[in-house]
Length: 204
Figure 1: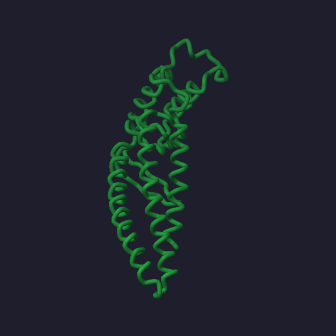
Figure 2: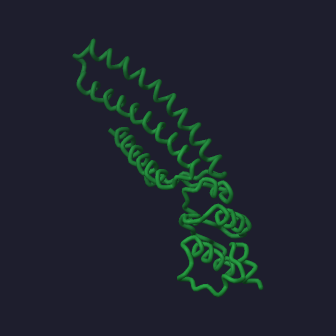
Figure 3: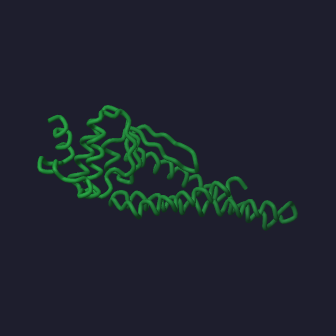
């Protein structure tokens, strides 16, 4: 009875008890594995895209069951609504570094967008300063002009890439809202590459 009580929370009916595991769909296997961990009373779960291949009722069942889980859950997911339901902290991995944030995904994304806007404002200010610097260099080319011109060129390139980064981050927010995991992964990969390019330029 206790086993069936747990299985029923994961949308398994009594007649499902006689099914062979090999006959289950991908989403049903995911639900069964999570139910098994609950029955074993695990206190630490590591989940990789647990809502993949699931319909809306199945996702809701998983969200409800995991929200009642008393232990710790470490999850990787592109499903922002799932993360909003169960996450109490987010860890962003960027350029090989960990950036913790305490709150759900929506709170994390708002904070990240606010930070990006501040960065954009600083970039715009620097761009104006760089343009003035180039005008100055054109008037005074006899004082190490080549080296300073190269430096200003790098800074202008950083400014351009920072603007591209802000645009990609906006696109990521839109595809997450549509639950488009495939496009979300592609954009996230592009964002990571772009961030690495910017970091390399900052080091020059």
